[in-house]
Structures are given as structure tokens and as C-alpha cells.
Image: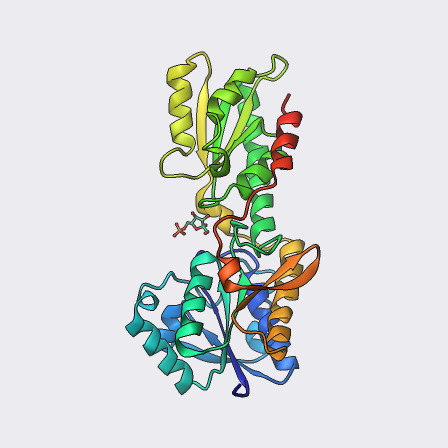
Length: 325
Ligand code: F6P
């Protein structure tokens, strides 16, 4: 195996709070262990267009508390083509980059997996997504901050919901996964969570309304996972038609969920995983995502990390139901 001297780092896909902390950790840990580092801008597009700069420890100063990603992010269309990946590889060689650390979600690690196979490039992934949907890690970087952001928003929505005695359907992100919706519902004391994992079961709206809203409560919060077919608007419209006695409103939290300064948990997670990526390179690991399970750093092969069946803990569904009686 060729000696690794220079490590390239990039962020890709939807940004998440803590990506900057991860860039900082990768850079500082790599330099501490004798590697040089290059920052690649705008995700894989930056490899294709050669937007690459040498990084020093100073390049990542004052980053741990900053949301977003200083490297910028993109969902690269070019990298989905063979031609684009070949260009990316040629630029990597020209820049003297021997290994890549990719911070991103499912799509980004899928890209890394294909690239690594095609060109025999050592790639290490870090789970950077608010969705928490990567298999093999208990938490992804950004998830905790977003949960806290949702909680703050819903606490405020509850005030007005109470004043007007309304049902609020609050839509949260998560793509095809219900981690954000289910856990924020517990954290906010919501009456229900409508999540993609449960859509195949009984009609979640009927189940929620069927319980009736407790007489002692004068408002109700339902957290709904985003979905093109049945997001918060869909359920609100249904309540308007099927249960006209209720006063209903919708709040779609949108991209504010992705911004903000990372929580302490995310900063620590990003720092541990970033350092873990460099340890993995030293350990001759290839094509693995660095995850955390039971508070231990683990190496998860890309093929497992991108599996689409990471499931929500059904015990949490029971807890939420019990809390809402
Ligand atoms: O994967 C992260 C995520 O924020 C999802 O929760 C959401 O569905 C999607 O990205 C939104 O992407 P965009 O920023 O392109 O609208």
C-alpha cells in the first residue's frame, strides 16, 4: 500500500451543525500525527474543479462553535458520472492527496464507496447529517443540535397553541427517517409523532385522534416527519375535513433545523470521530465510516453504513404513547 502523506478533507450533502468541528478535528489530528492536510471546497465538485487549499492548524481556528461548513457543501452531479470521478481522481493525484476524509450523509458515503472502488483510493467517512440515518453508528454529527433546535421551536409553538387551544402539526426534517420526529416528540412532550417507519402500520392520524385529546389539555402538538406525500399539510387538511371541531395550524420548521452553533455533544462527537478518522488511516483501514456505538469508536464498512434499514427504537414509540395518555 502506497504511503499516505497528505489527506484531503471535504464536506458533502446537506450540511449539519458540527461539520466545522469535524473539519477542525481531522485537520489538527492529522497534523499532530505527521500528515499534511488539504481542504477541498464544495464537496466532490471541488475535487472535479480543483478548488483545493493547503490547511494548517490556523486554517481551522475558531471553528468548533460555528455552524455550517467553511468548506461549503454540494450534492455533486458531476461526481455521479464516470467522467467526473476520473477528473476528480486526476486532480487528487496532481494535488498529491493520498487519502480522503469525506464528511457527509448517505449519498456522500455512497459516492466515496464508488470512488474508492474505481480508483483504489483510501477513503474514510464521517457521519455528518442531521437525519441520524446512517447504519452502524448510534449518533451522527449534527443530530443532537437539530433535536435541541426543534425542541426550542416547539416549546415556543406550545405557548401559542395553548393560548388558542389549537392542534399544531409541526413538520421536521429527516428525509426517510423518523429519528428527529420521534425523539423531538418525546423531548417536547408532544402528543404524537407521525414517522415514515410507521406509515405501513395503522393510520397514525386516526390512532392519535382516536385517543381523543385529553379534556384537561387545551392544545396538542403532533410532530410529523417531512414527506412529499404526507407531511404536516396533508394531516392538517385531513383534520379540517374529518374532524372539523378542531382548530388546526401547521408549522414547517424547514432549514433553520440545519443551522446554528453545535451542541456540546456534537462538538465532542465531531472531535472524537475526526481524530478517529486519522487513527483509522494509521491503522490501514480503508473505506469505512467512523461511528460511535455504546460510546466506543467503531469502523463501519461503507456498504453497511449506507444500508437504508437503520430502525428507530420501538421502545421509544411506546414511551411517547405512555407519556401522551
Ligand atoms: O439529509 C439532510 C436533509 O436536511 C434532510 O433532512 C432533508 O430532507 C434534506 O437534507 C433537505 O435538503 P436540501 O437542503 O437540499 O433542501
